[in-house]
Image 1: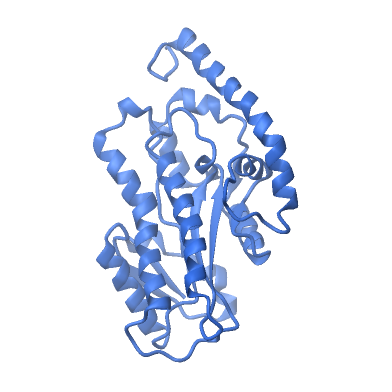
Image 2 (image 1 turned 90 degrees about the vertical axis):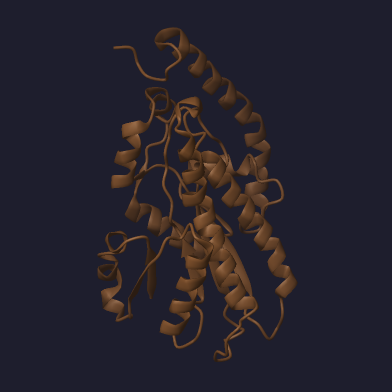
Length: 283
């Protein structure tokens, strides 16, 4: 089981969770915001795996810099896109080429078992809040990439080749060290707007993500609140299950979201009257 990270610290300790399964582990340090580096890690992982590319690739690199847009350092706009979108897009490009246009000889794969490419996005892919302008567009782009690739994979459907399934995880607040770091730059206005999100532990997000993947869901929300927001903007995305529940929820949420947006706008206007334009509380 290869782990990819920018430094050793980011992957240390992961082996404990699966030690009882007697799996082999391999760490590859790489800057995933570089296309050539993404190709290198897939090549190394393939070599480690007996010249067979991994059957499941889960892209979960990323970071959040929640800041009022005009107060955001311009370099952070590029950094956010690199960290959250290109890190996943480059890895996806590398592994899909390895699966679909291999340049190396490898043992014949079991065509009965599908391969899985998993992205990690956010509730903010569906409905964003003031203060997340540097971050939300990067996750919306990832959701769009997932939808596009899901359709493109029909080009390669063949009985002699494993099917490729696309999945995207959509979580809300996750209580981690990174979350604490985000709160150091996050505006008080943004904290006020997201008070309705109770948050989840990383373990809870992982369990719900895996449960959704095991059910075969393409878009996997980790909370019911996220599922409601997801159904309000499904568009041409694949519905889960028999599509009935998501479709009914989409009808309801198309009305509900009118009032949700009105409520959020009124909170921002009220904040300006009480605290001014900085997004921070008055001392």
